[in-house]
Length: 120
Image 1 (cartoon, rainbow, N blue to C red):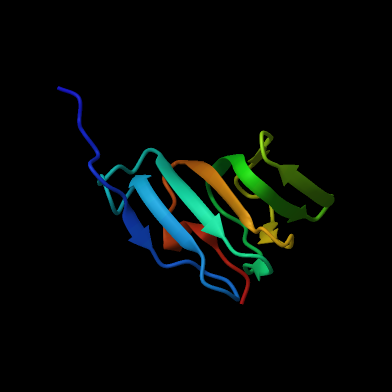
Image 2 (cartoon, helix red, strand yellow):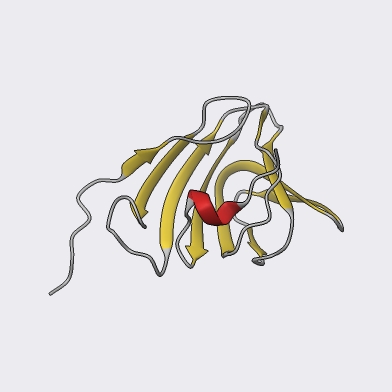
């Protein structure tokens, strides 16, 4: 039988400004360890600590621009575009533009605080 996800769980976000994370599928909301799917709403000027996660992350930007910084460069991912980051790769996410950004993130396996390995 299919499982209805009636509403997301709001998860506390890391970073210098409040960011909204609505987890629909994942360890918190659906008790799913294999994958997580969340909608993110980041304000202008938001930046989170760098991280070296154990999971792959697939991100589709719905509105605004998401900046993805890695050890090899910087990608500006605009509405209608997507980015893939690989587990074990250092990355840092930010939303420097005036409108911030809204995006969907899928993590394989599911996001967990213990597996994101944020910088101190």
